Image (cartoon, rainbow, N blue to C red):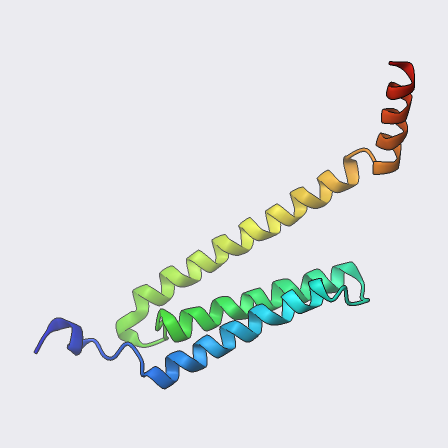
Length: 122
């Protein structure tokens, strides 16, 4: 018996198709919200997109990477949780930096005025 078969199956075709369908739906919904220019608060839209992204990460972990809470896979689950914590820190930090840059950068209408003044002087 090979080592591969001792550690269990990599999932059935039906299970993989369920994972694929969920991943596709979780990609299409945010895409439709953005491309359809849905009227909603910007922070709500960002929250929905990030929430669906988090759910999609879980779908990938469960259906494609086969991460579970089995005692045999304790190291895999532990390392996955650590990776998710680091991912959360990176995402939160990126959003914080982008928000602060957006708040502290010169507004576009002021830049347009400056460009008009420079073109009139030159």
